[in-house]
Image (tube, rainbow, N blue to C red; front, side, top):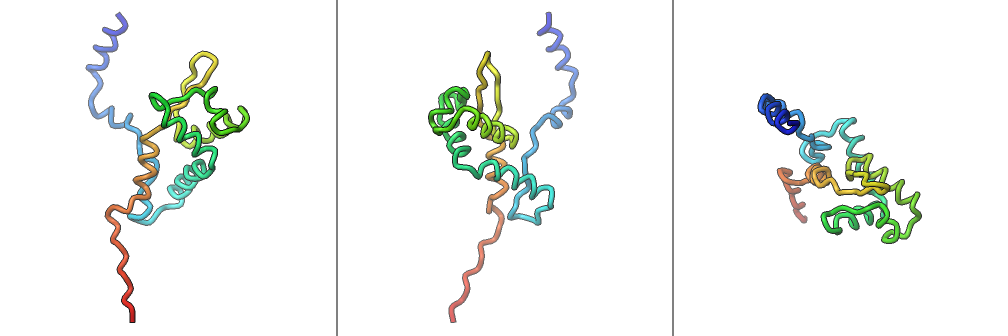
Length: 138
């Protein structure tokens, strides 16, 4: 009965409403135009979350796990830090939008947000940026 309601309800939603649900990229391209203060602050905060060896190790470990997800209980040994410290790093990565988390029973599982990492990569893309001219030697 419930699935029938949702099937009927979904048929009445106009396609234009789905555009609002699409996640927006995090940042405008840095090298293709002048970056505003707010965009620069958001981009810097995200890179600051990445600018820590333990956080990079956590991202790498999670990304290489089956289904690209890992339980917090499995993240302590690989980085050699205490559980509270690992939880702190995961909290910062999640707040920066780089990880998703899902509570399953007593444990929290983390997944990489590939869309967010792709947006960061795109923000630093040199595509469309002219190559610098080589200086002529005298």
